[in-house]
Each structure stands twice: as C-alpha cells, then as structure tokens.
Length: 555
Image (cartoon, rainbow, N blue to C red; front, side, top):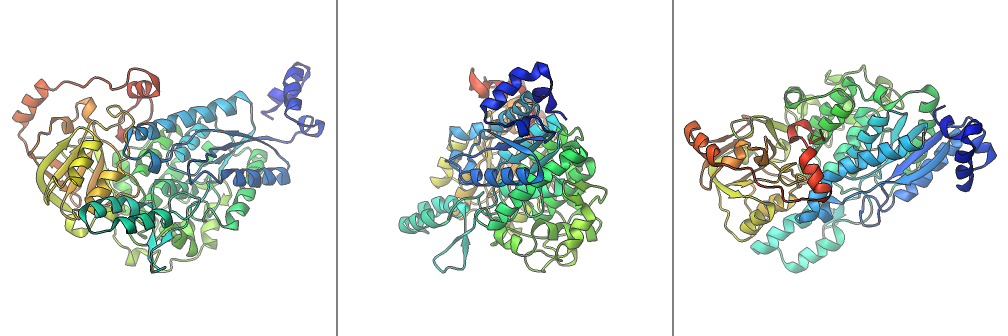
C-alpha cells in the first residue's frame, strides 16, 4: 500500500512517532487500512463552504465504516460573488492553480492511498480536480451542494444572487426602490450552499457526475438536505472501495468521460466558465481538447433544460425531477454520450437505467428541446480568431445579432461607470479589454457589467465582448474569453471608439468592420502594456498563464 512509505518498517519509526502524536493507534498504524486524505475548502466567508465541516465529518464516518483511516486537511477558496467588481476578482481564477498545487503537495507529501475532495464553488472544484489528476489516486468528489433559491414577496417566484446584481441597475434606473433592493438582500440567498442557479459552481459540480468522479446527486442535492449527508457518507465508503480495486481518477477521467462532460454542459447550458475549466481538466488528464471540439459537441447536443439565469427554475427544481442522471439518460437515448465511460460508482448504463425519464417540463426530450444546439456557443471571426464563448441559451432571440459602434474600455470599472451613468445606449457594443488571463491578470469574472446592462433595460439591444470572463449568472449577448487577449496583441486590442462591430451569435462570429490596411497601421503603433503587478502571485501568474482557449492553464 502506498502509505506503507510512512508507517511500515524500522526506518519509519520517526514517521510513526509523529503519527502517534496525531492520536493514531497501533490498530491503525499496524494495519493494512488505507490512509485517505480528505481535502476540504471550509471557509466561514463563503456561503457555499461555511458548512463543509459537517460533510467532512460525514465522509470520515463513511471511511471508518468501510475500513479506512481518514485524515483531513484544508485548502483555500475565493468567493466569486464577494470578489466581484473589484481587485479581489483578479485572484479568483488565479486561485485555481494555487488550489491544484496545494492538493498535489499535501497528498504527495504524506503518501496517502486515496482522496476525497470536498469543494463547492467556482474555481475550487476544478482546482481540486486538477490537483487530484496530477497525483492520480483513487478519488471521489462530494461537493457542498446548491443553495436553495430565495422567494419573492409572492412566495412563488424564485430569486437568487443575480436578482441583486440586476437590482443595482434597476435602482439606478428608477424601476426598483431602494427598499425593495434591501428586501432582496435579506432573502435572495437564504442559507448555505453554492448560489442556486446553473451558475459556475453548480455547473461544474454537475459535470463531476458526468466525468464519473462524483456519486449521483452530487450536483443537485441541496446543501441543507439530509440526502447531502448520506451522499457524503457514501463517498467516504466509496473511496475505500476504489482503493481496494486500485481504480484511479485517470482511469475514470478518460476521453469518453470528457466527451460526456462536454455533452452535459451543452444540454444544460452551464456557465461559460465550464468550458474554461473542463478544457483545463482535460489537459491535466492528458486528453486535451480545443475550441473546435466544443463546436462539434455544441452542434450535436440539444439544449434540454434552462435553469437560471437561462430560465426561472433553479437547481432544487432539477433535483426534484431526477437531476443530472435524467439529463444524461436522455442524452444516452439519442446517442449523444460515449457509453464506454466508467464511473466511480459502477457501470454508466446501469446508473442511467435507474434514473427517471425527462418530465417534459424541467427536463425536456430531444424532440421538445429548447434548441437543437447546445446552450453554449463558440464564436470565431476576425476579433476572435482563436475563439470566444457566449451562453446562447441565456440570450433573448431579439439580441442574437447586433451591429453597432464600439464603446471601448480598458477595465471593468470604467465600463460599469459608463453603463450606470447612462452613457451606453441602444445599439452599442461594449468592449472591455486588458482583462484576460495575463493582461488582467486573472481574467476577472464580470457579472456586474452584464447585470448592469440588464438592470438598465439594455439586455436586448446592447452587446458586450471581452477577453475576460463572465459569471455563470450572466445573461444577454455577452461574448467572453476572446482569444488572443488584448495583452497578447489580439485584434481586440486594436479596436477604437466608434468602430462598427457585429456580434452574430447564430452565425457564430464576432467581427470588426475595419479594413486590413487600417488594422495593420494600428498594429504597427500598438505597444504591449507593462504588467500591472511586479511582485506576488499575480505577477507570477501573468508570466505563466496561457490563453483562455487553452483553459488558462499555466505553462
């Protein structure tokens, strides 16, 4: 057993002494019971993480029941909602690599036999998965679970964090009172869990089921349900079984599993961030994918459900009709999945056979799908020769093609000030640049400007493009991940105020209507900006990070 490196033999007497100092017994140290790492991102400030110790205790119980020895350690997390629209957001995507590094260091440093990952939100989930792939041990992921949706004053309409981001523009515009905004502040996020829509956190936690590394229900069972505790106990039991079978995470995260994750992403129209993270996960698993692979899956996968922000329903509603398994069962019926994939809990087909059929309302069939194309769309064109991404399922049909003058901003804050200041009008195309992985640095997630556009009543008439990212809660004709980014001299860096731009979502292109000759002149005088950070993690990140179309992994 791998952990024999730290507990067996005369030469390991010093190691055992330290383990005895941890309170371990002879029965543990002199046995062949596997040593299981529990990696938690418990954090008081993050609502999706402030209850994770409860699940850690459940996982420990499961490991003990199955004959293993649990050992807990922690890693960091950044709450994207709290980090939004200020310098803190530069550290969010950056933290994914820090988390992956911390998982690798702690697991390798202590010779564990298996791993249970307990994340919940945004960058923490893919960061932990990437770290686990590097060490390649038997692994199960159990996340904290989604937050319940809030309820409006009618006690029927569901609300969420996005309600508040939209409210900023509505109060500014005069279509909502400050008193109503205050009421939503106290009710839209009713308790622990990852924010209640199909935003980034819940998207990637659902994808963990499709990748085969999480038990059924991981992505949709609400954080406050007792089912979440039972799921965590079973995750603890399952990892011990995986150790006995020597079934490692790379045995599960195969090209087939990655394809199934991509198909699920398109079927539920997840956050655009999932394309960034799944591309990074695939690269770490040594089965790389590119933007053209995403195009192929998008064109072949129908959009079967529309959870907020694409529709009024939330994750708890999806959970009530069967969750991820129901969506995947329909994808399997139409041959959109690779059934050669395996899972940490057994045969893929046997799992899907146990899942309920689509209810026809929350989850539709291919024949009644919202769209015969996936909920996410890859864009190209002369402004995005290496690709860009839009959440097509969250765009109003009236806003699928917009041509208008460029309103150019070199940072997010200036764009928000212009939007809320009434300087953006119908037909404008907002350009926010130098917010990419290297140029930001950190590729800030920008829910604030997209929500401000919605709140100001411009969601059907104004487009937004950026080399930064959007939140999973963003909606409207917002094209992100424009590659190459401005800091790398991408075409987005050459746009000037007033240039005509067309954002054609159905056509899959974003184009600048400026001649090649004029662009050549602009390029001749363009100079790459100096890095904004000279020391610290952001300075290092800016030097090492790759472009968004490559998953913004470090080189």
